[in-house]
Structure formats: structure tokens, C-alpha cells
Length: 465
Image (cartoon, rainbow, N blue to C red; front, side, top):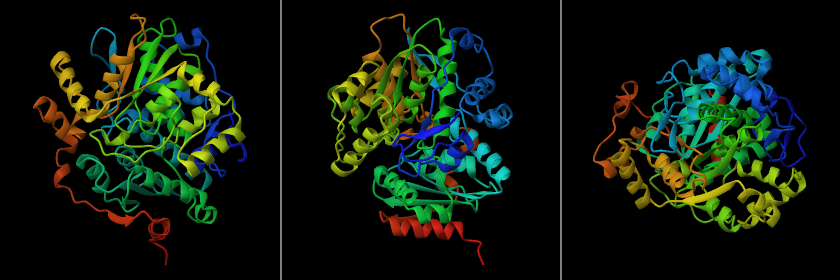
């Protein structure tokens, strides 16, 4: 399996090289040169497999088989708080919550990042290399990445988060990890500013080489690959490949829903993708009216979706443009320069044949959390509630098609919103019960590339003579 850049100017790479590279040198994102496809009999043979075994088999199709991938998967998921790893919970006659928050940081990012930490260890040890991981987070990626990379011998990690724009639990899960290889920076700006800084560091070729930069954001293909298995597991449990399913995904950076699309591309019968957004509704506007134009990011009760520039959309755009790398690069250039992405009508129609957009404001989110608790006895975090509302609004017309909602975070990560909606304040699991008493450590810096690069350099060189 080889990987190519969506912008066509980077040399093809194998899986391990893509893992370490993160972003392609031409600014594009790596995608498989050809997509692996499985027949119905091959999918049926995977029904009932333990989650780590299923994950290993799917990842091997993307080139991870050169690693001891099954042992890595077993180790990565051994500490999750549910024996099914990603259990399905039925909410009504056709809507199911796919709970992705049973990992160490209570968010879906653990599903991929616990595995990526082990992958980095394996590849770096084999190559005798050291990397500096830089990442941006709107709330959950940072803590999951830090938990996966803390105390690893060949990795330094720096995470940027927007100052005062995460929940307190999200911030503390990052800033109370005092491992010497971990650095947290609060940026005076929004998530898009943090994401832009990470991309700028990768595009600064001398700095990238000096720091041997790598990424754990969903710009890293390995993140997407490691998210495909949970959609496969849910679809197989509900009867695929002999029964269609639909998915509704609370979406900010588009990586989680792209993983579901990849499962369909591999042969699973996923009939519809509902892209659920909050008031930062660029994806919903695109799918409704081909309006991919940025607006100021507005803080919301679902901060992990407070994003206007969805990095992973570039991978879908590449496919919608029939893998025309030149056209993809030009569309992304204009989007960066003008704040509006020109998507040809034919490509947009290809998107709307499968994807539907949905947006919900904070009041609607509170109402949906309350409804779920009242009608199903289920406590949902704000992101999951946006997803369940989207599923009810835009489920396929065929009532026989079940809808899988990605339940992306534990309700205790957003206790204020859940208490406001239900009167109940969800407690943190026992392993995090002292989170509010732990010492925090982080710096605050302006939205300035030179200042951020200086901080990253100082962290990576902290032990130099």
C-alpha cells in the first residue's frame, strides 16, 4: 500500500513513512493510492471478532501489517473501560449510540491515538529516530494525544489549544500531565488559528527538518485509518454487509465522518452520512447550497466542533474531483486566499448524493440532551446530542435502515451543559476523580508563528548542553 498527496507534488510513501510525516511536503494530505475493497463474504467473516482483532485486520489492509499490529491493538484497547471497546447502545427503534468514549481521556480520539502512540514507538525504535509532535486541539485531540505520547522515549509533544475555548475538564486533562516530554500552549485565538500555526510549522521546511516534526491531528492518515474499524464493527453488528446502515457524526475537522466514508469505500453498505454541526455550520452550508465560505468561529456548548476550516475535507474534495490533484491544490489555495472554496457543481452533487448537513444551536443542544434523558434515560454530552438530533432529522426515508450516531465524548467532560439540561451533574470516572485538584502547567502565547516555533524549539532542545 502506497500513499499519495492530495496536491500531487509529494513523493509516494508507505504507511510507516506517512505515519511519521503527517502532512505532505506540498501542503496536501496523504491518501491511499488505491482503496482496499472487501467482498460481502470477507466482511461476513469478520462478524463477531473481538474489536482489537477486527481493527488489526482492517489496518493491515492499509499497510500496517508490517508492524506487529494485532499485538499493538490488543495492548492499545486493553485499558478501555468497556469490554466491547466501542459498544452500541440503542436509543430508540432505529437510532444507536456508538460509544467511543471509554478510553483514558473519555473521548473518541483515544480510539486512534492510543494505537498511534504504540505505532510511533515501534517505527522510531526501528529507525533510531526521534520526533517532535505538534498538534492543535479544539478540546479532545490534545488530551488523547498527550496520554498516548507521555513519557515515550523518542517523542516530544507540543499541543496548542485556544485560550479559554475548551471546557475546564478538557483543559485540565492536558495541562495536568506533567511528563517532561509534554508541553501545552494556550494560544490567544480560536482553534482555526491553532491549526493554521501547526500547518505553518510543517510548511516551514527548515524548521520541520530541524525538529523532525510529526503530527497526531487527523491530518495524519494513520489517525483516519485507525478510526475506520469502529464503523465497521457497528455496521457488522447491525447486519452489514446484508443490511444497509446510516451514520450521523458530530463533525468539526471532518476526520471522523471521513473514516465512515472510507468504510463505505471499502465495501460496507453505508447508505447515508449525516454531518452534524453546531452554530459553526460551514459544512452544513456547503452541503445545502455549495457554500463553503468561512465566518468567524463562535464559541458554543460543543467546543470540539467550533471550527470553520475542516482540514480533512480536502481528502473528500480530492475524491469528489476524481483525484485531480491540480484542481484540489487550486481549490485549497483559493480557499486560503479568499475564504471561499470553489467546488464545481458536479463535484458538489456527488457529495450531496451521500452526505447531508445539519446544524443545531446551543438551545437546541440543551433541548436534545434533555429529551434523550427523558425518553431514553441516556446522558449525552453536547456533541453527541447534536449527532442524535441530526439522526432524527435526516435519517434515510427507509425506516428499516438503522442509524449509528458517533457518541464522541463522555458526558462528564461537559458537566455544566448536562446539568443545565437534566439537573444531573455527571461525575468523572474514578480514575479522574481528583482532576480538579491536580497541578496545571501550561504557557500562554500570542497567535504568532515565531513565538510558537521558539517555544517548540526550546522544548525539543531542553536537555541540550
